[in-house]
Image (cartoon, rainbow, N blue to C red):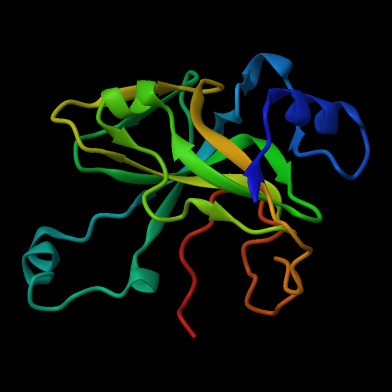
Length: 190
């Protein structure tokens, strides 16, 4: 398995067929071995429970699928994320990982230096996935941060498998995130 370099990414995206890796493609977002993904307008913020319920959290843990999220849209081209806040946001671009290609999502050094983590644990994108990418963004700093819409916030590294996988994303019933164009909250565990 090997990472695709800038020439390979450009060639695949310019081919203009189903082998496109990124849509819409912008050559200015190509890096030596990755592609920058931009922050979209739609996002979700975790709904904070009442103060008394927050006190009980240490006694009564909340299952990930019991969290409630509020759908939001960026105001005046900005998303403000407060210290300790976790949001789910979508990429502007859609990725189309057909055949042998899969993706690894990572934060950019610019966002990391600002105290933001962009992917937490959802950094692997299986072959067969085609849609926008959901970012899990958390502010680890002590001041609110304004994130401009359309700014490169993460990068995807495209890697190629040595042989075609038998099980690609979107072929099983539990591949529930396929076809979502907005940030998607966690689904129940089996």
